[in-house]
Amino acid sequence: MRHPKGSERRRGSQRKKDPRGRGAQQGKGPGAGGAGGPWAPRNTRAQPSTGRRKWPQVLPGEAQAGYWGKFFLEKELGHWHRGAGAVPIPGGIESRGDFSCTFTYSAQGGTNEQWQMNVGVSEDSGLFSCSVRRPQGKSYLFFTQFKAEVKGAKIEYAMAYSQAAAGALSDIPLKQEEFEISETAVSHREGKFRFELSKLVIAAKSARDEL
Image (cartoon, rainbow, N blue to C red):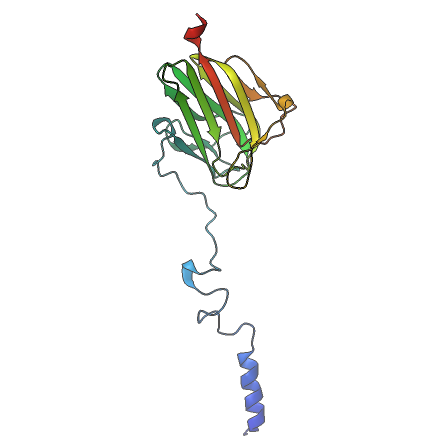
């Protein structure tokens, strides 16, 4: 039985307007574009460390503090290690001559962040400086504890920040009640620290000058 021509045209137009149409298969819809297309699903699986960044050997030392949640980064051997949330993990250590600076912390959440650790010594070796910071200015890690400790020097000045200066961002220091300073260390204050840290700086004087 032959259908009227008008009926065929209506069916054809319905097929073209089918929301499941063939556009996606032909590279015109959200499912198209191949792996590099704008709608391509992102690979959210944590990738293993390449070992290209060795924090203790590089200055300024750039260390990845990312892939958080179930994993913590331990740079002792340049490998990823599973860690418990309440246990401080070595973030990095840098030394110059008789001086050294060690940063340990415990944190959760956040994104694939990069952090830097820098140390410096004055020409007469009388002053030592150490800084740990996120270059992008703001960290989204949930810090439960932190500690920066120096050896070979006594701390003259120290400050911790919830946000570091970068681009349009400015330094926002923690309240004094959130952290404590001793002769050789800066650390969070239990029950007062509000879990935000993006930068920490220390200026110390050579212990030999005290003799």
